[in-house]
Length: 313
Length: 274
Image (tube, rainbow over all chains, first blue to last red; front, side, top):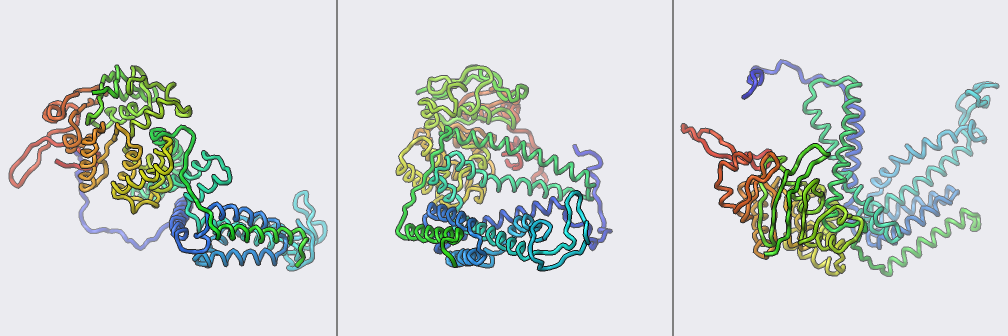
């Protein structure tokens, strides 16, 4: 039954050396690991929603509406002191909701510098926004230009640009913190369902919910691809071959996810789904929820009035 | 006995070239326990999909509860009385639990079917709690289905169908991936449901459970046609039939110094047991 070559068995001690470390993990493999870690973290974060804290005790609809109102109010604010105070207030809410403040800050500040920082970076320099010199960067002399853009003789970081950047980053950080706090303190299914109270169509709510649920499953499949490949990799492939392999897997994942979506749809149809999703949710708004929404509305109104200079501080 | 499913010369072809069923004629009556057996790719799962009106015959006719089942009559986005009646009467447990468990918690998963079928919310909650308690999965209530073990997922899948209380239960390889204790639990559950008068149609190639969960056996050949349709004892004792359908094969091995030859079946793709 077995071909001849399969009947050969290598005997004797291993002649090789295990000290050679070789190349580091590939970019794709690193990225996949990071994404999987993120999902792992997000699984852990479901625990926060079950803790006995301030925000966990509130009705999810109240939390959702409050978060949206607060984000709008913070987005209107231009005063760095108001923004800083708002950010501290969000940290206080996190603390009262029994979320480790260092974990919470880390979760927000990992993304803020990447996205907001890159957007706001050019504004720091007098090339894009005139202002008073704060830190000189380079002296180019008169007549310097970058393509069709005429550059100033001295490039420096401006005071106004720095203030603008700080305000912008703080505003983004506060808004992201509000969203993260909402996600951390609310169970995912309850949060998605509470979107219905904002009249978000049912089919979108269900799709969102299912997306979240199947991301985990598909990520497991992606991890299995890499594990299976690793287990059979004897020497590293050329970049071109690696790219071809990744492209092939991406295509396969698309086919697999389409096939799975068809089967999931069948499973839904077999249980009576006819395009109109019915969800079970019965929330009761209590006194503390009314108090919370009233506080948030008052706070947000104050922020809006300060931002419009109607109240001066 | 009332005829529930009637298939006349039904064939099904995937993508217009891969044949899955070939001229199948079948009649199933209420209260029967039927095992559909066959090797991998013989058409068992396709037949279950047709019986659940998820796919429609490429040729031939399929009647359920005396009504013709056609794609036009079963347009999923149109609410129609027969569609609702059919979904209430027939439930399917898929082979892969991951495609069946799409809700965010176990509770929601089990409540999904009764909710879609328009039961009052209080009744849905009561049923969901009772089914969870019956299946011993109340502690999983708020867990996300993707965090469950294989056996737990299977239990939730079955619970999500039982909460609809269908009269006809279709099961695709229900013992696949279950440990021995869970298999025994499942067999006992199916026996209890049978005693309650439910129709149970199981696609399987696990010959060990066939006689325990069914009285009638249908064998599909690798040419996608029905090779036998008779009572379980008769089919299970027809070794020639089971061998030709690739459900058992001759296996020779050694017990101490004695060479021994016996017929042997495969459960699933990986297990190898006598």
